[in-house]
Image (tube, one colour):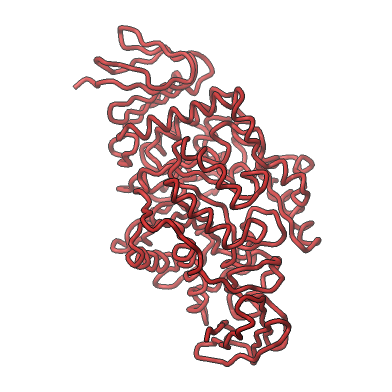
Length: 580
């Protein structure tokens, strides 16, 4: 007979409720409680009473058909008809990642609707889809970073079966799937974990309140809760990897850090499943220990987001200097990150008023994920402007060329490839009206350091804010969006056909800054990439001896017999034989 279990070490009694009938559970070792599942309960909804309080959904609920405060439902993961048995993702060093938000990627906002757009991603040259968090969160619309039922795919997106259909369809088309997960905090609405046990601690504070208890009393089972969650996504939903949100906010002073334990257990699962798995960290620490192997003191993660690359590129392209962009702005900052991996590798940060980061010596660019846009850097602006709202089309092409010829693993944000006109705003739909209002006030306070007018911030609570963030797929067929889409396809084709552009070794990239003309040149194998950050035409010497050909140019590029290039727009990618 199937059993149902729950961990509640401090409870005096725990009952499981099936069909409005409470059934007393039996206490086992280490604070676990068990009870047999009645035959009538296998397909029905259930919940728990803890010391007579509740009912509360299962902390490990696999399905929440009625939202965060409703009852749970059991799921038989073995019942789904997977067809991806021969699937194997390619090496992460050759990846091109595409971040998307299920609710705004299509008008329908569901897992199944995403499937209808996968051919576009394949044709573009994408290798991996990165899905923003889908764990059950309050309401029907939100970014997903306030999830509370971490084992249950969001009901409004299509629940567990819908997510499996999406992953299966991605694999059928040769696309890997990465899932964004949040282990540094839970959302405030519908968060019942504290009712069951010491999942949180006040020994540390985070921007979201009490930290997750990963190193205090009873923390072994708390760590298991989050690690088992990660293993579930990889095993039961066939995910190819996880993106770990804000790991700098995961507080753990254990001798074996939570991230190291997670990486080790994922590696064990990888061996068991016989397919490659990846873990990607979001971190603003510029600490390569995250991605160094445990044998030399690292945590053993696959890759981490490169915040310095984004910030240096954004500041150089837009001229913005507020908030954390005050640490960037010169083309030297951009040259440094391209040549060394980080701009701040122990250097003094004026924004932080202290030294920041450590050298990424010996780290492959493959392990650093670079982007020009992502959900944070767009959505955390007051009015959700994409970089295409801030700069000209030619400068936008310059940004794309910089990203796709850089030594880093590139990531695009949904709609970036055609310079989508829609913003990506912050939106939420909490069931608690007071919480919705608190979120609105918090957003206004958060933007103070960027000198943005609070009155211009769209109300995150309204459906209109959510609808404005949806992609308009029709516009990609018309200029200037179609022109931008062609440019991205061209660059991605060059990248896929040129091994030097997929070489992550930073010692094989030559970066030269022409300060007098604001020209940045990259030499990568047989390729020269020339990036004009000035607002006027420039003439650059091209050190090629013969067989020169322009592989991509954002507008007009002329090469003379003297091997000079008149760059009248912003960027060119040139293939030729170098002088020996």
